[in-house]
Amino acid sequence: MMPGMLSTNRRVALVTGSSRGLGSAIARQLARDGLAVAVNGLRHDRLALDVVGAIRDEGGVADAFTGDVTDEDQVAELVAGVAEAFGPVDVLVLNATGPQPEASLDEVPWEEHMAQLEFFVKSPVLIGRAVLPGMRAKRSGRIVQVDSEVVDRPPPGRSAYVTAKSAQIGLTRSWARELAPFGVTVNTVAPGFVPVERHADVTDEVRQAYVASVPAGRFGTTADIAHAVSFFASEAAGFVTGQRLVVDGGRGLG
Image 1 (cartoon, helix red, strand yellow):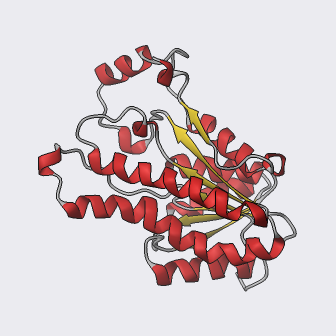
Image 2 (cartoon, helix red, strand yellow):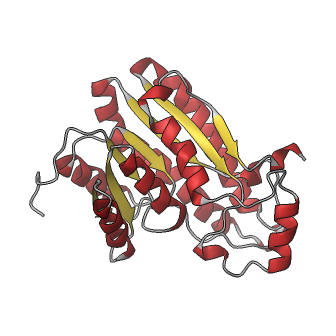
């Protein structure tokens, strides 16, 4: 489409890593909430177009904007493309993730730690800095990070992932304090285990044990997480910042 063809007066949301899984559910929920949604995936990722098609079929406004969110140049192109099509980003959802290898501490090289930090610290910093001028100009904005229950219940063999997710929570709290005077809220949602495509190798025994540990007696769904993000992204959440909402069916109580 030609630049400007998708321009809209709706609030604009950019959801990183939204071509599949949890990110796609968040993108679709925000579109249902009335936002124009920038669906993000890597270049040549055709699944982003499928998510856009599903949103449009429901009467929503969306388009695909590809780019590696850990690459500074591609982030600049991504945010500029969204602004050209829809306008400045009002809601930023930081959901992008990558491979999450499991290995014991003595088998995890520093490079694996850096790879996790690329997604959960570097990526939010790059994109946050890129969208912040528009939010400051409007004196309004919503930034929602997606972390994980593993910060509270770290499983063996996931030290690099848990460390990076813990750092992401630190970003959320420090940003919330710094950006509050500009009307920008920064919060994070911590999902419990939500089965998606990349969890296909989880055994039935593990699944049953997990459900048994959840007071709610079931797995979470991508919709459960998307509704939590929807609240933080809403105008109704304007007086909520620096908060972490754990969506785990009560598992953290045990």
